[in-house]
Length: 498
View (tube, rainbow, N blue to C red):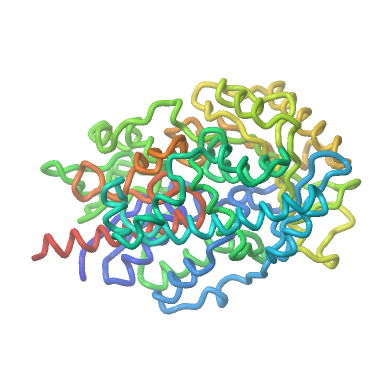
């Protein structure tokens, strides 16, 4: 199949879309405003060190294995993956800790040791429910083009309808967790899965319990960091003849007879195309950042529907007093007040802190004794288009995070020149249009998944990909969105040719 396609943005969704189009014979050009690939999957330089500055969790390995295999490659030849035996370590204070393991039975035993046998049984019932939700939604929703409630039921078929009703699609996550766990700490731990979509567990649908199934199927560590995935996809796109132009921002998408027909670059150069894929937050279209004519391409999203942003500190320092794992979560004492504060546009006094210790890999041989690379995150409101985040404001938030870590026994020794801060305002500058929201629209309520933009929009020839579109945020979902975008392009071009 011939034709010229342009992909705006070299994030994971854009790279996967470009790869699928290039290997099917289209002349593909990827236009990226930044200096390298990855989008939110980015690297950050801190002194002489380089750290991952975006997503830190790799799951759903079969999604990427299929992408690479269909491109004539093998995933393990391009990235060095190691399974994590400990999925994550969790702490509430200096005494209360809990590890979740790749082995579900080991996790149940650890939960029993922390909170008793009844909670361990509740955990096993919870994981069984997560598996049911996954099985009910994987084919008709996650891997399918954007559904509506009616089409979802049609895809599930009569045999799948009982499963759809049994997964409690209209319930909220926090309420459902109360049916499995009496211990507030465990509700807090598994409620955190909502933040993987940038959403409050008190507003998120119970179907997000499926994250437990995704993690239990395998969490992987990438030698050299998560950024290696972006570099591997970049190589594959180029191997199939795709062209990637960095430091090349797009001023606007060009329309001809109401159809996308190319782009105009920031330097006024124009490029023609039969199809244009936008790998950016869909809100950028509504904000007119790719041309005034694109404002109505999708249904506008109001600011309250934004997902969360974050304050992130990427640093090099010496950690002591607490045994960090590759992924460690330090929970604040009052989860509800934390999310109430975020809804009100502020960060609470005792926020939950996530740390990715990038030099630790699940065994003693990879636990450094000196300075190490650390990625520290607290959730923040997506107000980066309104709040500039002064140095004093950031330091107040850093002190809140330090107090939470100290209450669990962790001390991090570093220096100002070894710390780089990324605020919602910074994320808004890097990925404009949504105030620094990192996950697209928030997943509030059961209808949220159906409101998320799909691959096609109101402008023929224009397609969407990325974590802000269906099926949702996270690396594997962004990759699937790229596949769906490429499939839509190929279907429409074939239809036009006929």
